[in-house]
Amino acid sequence: MNSETPPSTCGTFFETLYRVARTVNSSLDIMQVLGMIVGSTAEALDAKACSLRLLSPDGKRLFIGAAHGLSANYRAKGPVDVAQSQVDQLALTERRSICIADAQTDARFQYGEQAREEGIGSVVVVPLQVQNQPIGVMRVYSGETRAFSSEELALLEAIASLSALAIENGRLYERLDRNYQAALDFSDREFD
Image (cartoon, rainbow, N blue to C red; front, side):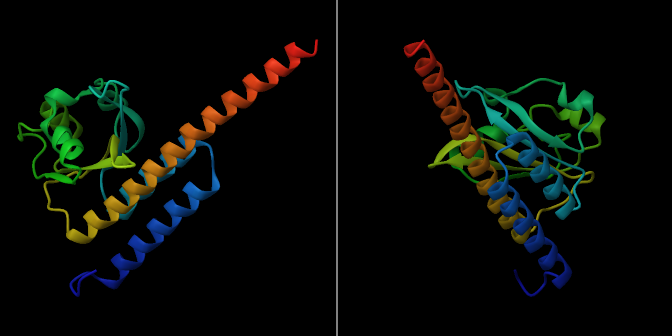
């Protein structure tokens, strides 16, 4: 944090990061974890909303994994087509955060008209990666046009890393549980 960052903001950022890390470490309920992450992130940045979008298996679309502060209409607009959303393409291919100062007019943002209807000003998109492979994006939406500070971006990148870890842990747990259930089913059939 630089000397211009107020101490209260530093404390809020550290508290948020600690809360997210503790939740990721303490629960295998992926929906609960992701819900807490998007809520805490929006709150820490005093943002209108936050969402986590996950890549489809073919890597062509981003689907909502969790969202906080977005209307049902905005969430129901459909998946983001990566080929049509330059901001998501950039975040995923360049593996870096991308800021959109005005989501309502920036052609890189796929749903500019819906952003206007939703009252979204600026958006920052942060890639979610597991073992350097993209699995989705975290988006933070402000209600007004604004710039995101380097400290805010650093917080978002740390939270995105923890989010990706939580998603991967959830996937591994589900696979392990399925394999365990299959082994039990096989064992039951073997000895009947």
